[in-house]
Structure formats: structure tokens, C-alpha cells
Length: 280
Ligand code: DGL
Image (cartoon, rainbow, N blue to C red; front, side, top):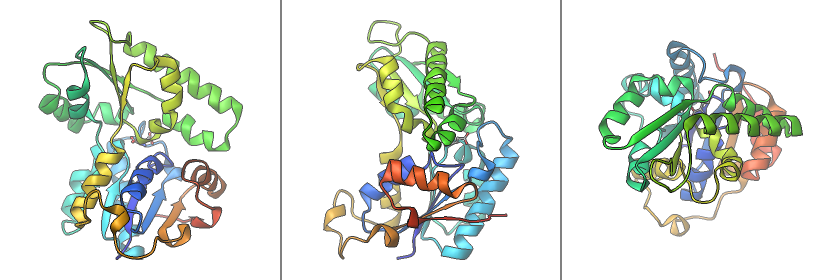
């Protein structure tokens, strides 16, 4: 089968790729990290839309992809609708902050959302809250600089890790009080695919009781459904498991060593799976 195309502004979408790989170990994936143009979250919707279309064209032309997973909340908010219009026969899955699951999980009815500026100011996010968020109190925080710090953390310097911790501390305290008591935030939506990689930092700041919600597994299930792969039977799918190099191709418009470090650190993939490309 043709590979599934996946993209993000950078390395954040690797968190979605992890879930896709778990769900479909026999599928092939080609991932584009648009790191030369990241972060998307503080750019205009028109810019993010233009980059999303350029990447979709690139993946379709060079790889004839079977489906496109937009592994970026910001790009989904800015471009999912227009991508669907332009590529109407291509199965497309977007990533959105998990408003509905969080509303179902929360006991206190106070829910935090961390996302990029682009996502929280989008019409799509307003619609999500309107459609699925009624009856809960939503504490929404645009986290300028956090995705960029995570992007840079692939250099794994202590300095970046400290910066990430400081940004997480700043934004979570801006959201309000976390805990299980009345009026406290008991559920936090990770509304940017980069933030999944700082789960441990957030967990250390917020304590063990707060529920952290992301959408990686839901996106993987939806992709399986669209491609007609049997649910929950990944291991029984026909054929021998593919080697990492057959299975995964990771491309970046930015720094190749940075992508290689991220692929190794977060997905255990060898440097040979990665390459640099130009996407205009
Ligand atoms: N990972 C992206 C998201 O899910 C965007 C981060 C950024 O580039 O600002 O929103």
C-alpha cells in the first residue's frame, strides 16, 4: 500500500506518528517536519494554510500517499477545510484539541487548554468549544514560545530543558489552580502536538491527580478506520513487520541533525530514516 503522509510544523507531530505506528505497525509512513518554517502557532492563518498546501502537494506528487494526517492542531485549524476541498478524494485526518473527551473526563468541570495562539484564536476552536464544551468552565492559554522551545530541545541542552520547565510553570500557573477540589482544574488538554513531549514536565508541576489529555490515539484510530484497517488487530495484520527504514521515512525542511536526534530520542529510529528536503 502507498504510504500514509503525515506532517507538522516540526517535530511535534512525531507524537502522533508514535500512535500511528503503534496502531498500524505494518503501514508505511512518510513524515514531513516543516522545521524551516516553524513555529506555525505565531504565524498568520494564511501563511500556515499556504505551507500546508505546499506539503500536501509535495507528499502527493512524490509519494502518491494513501491518506494525509495533519499532525498539527494549528495547521488543522487553518487549513483542514481547504485541504479537503483541494484533495477531495484523499482521506484526510486532522488533529484538534480534545475538548469532548476532556468534558467527559472532568469531575470538577474546570478544564485547562494549552495550545498555540493560532489554534486558540481560530474559528474552528471556537466552534469546538461551542459544540462540545457547554456546561464546563474552560481555562484557555495560548503558549507562545513553548513549541519553539520543544523544537530546539532536540539539541538536548540543559539550558533548553530549563527554559521548557519555566514556560510550562508560567503557563500552567496562568491557567489557575489545579487539583481535585471544587473550582480547581482537574483536566488539562494538550492542544498542540509538541506538548505531548513535555508531559513529564507538566506532570511534575501539576501532580499525579490532574488528567492530561491528547489526541494521538484517537487520530490513529480514525486513520485506521478511513483506510479500512481492522481496529485492535494490528498484530494480526498479514505480512512480516517492516524494518524501520522500510516503514518510516522522516523528512525535514530544516536541520537534518535536529530531526535525527528527535527521531532517535522519541521514536528510537536510526538516523538513516531521515533526510532533508525542500518544499516550495
Ligand atoms: N505542533 C503544532 C500544533 O499542534 C504547532 C506548533 C507550532 O509550530 O507552533 O499546533
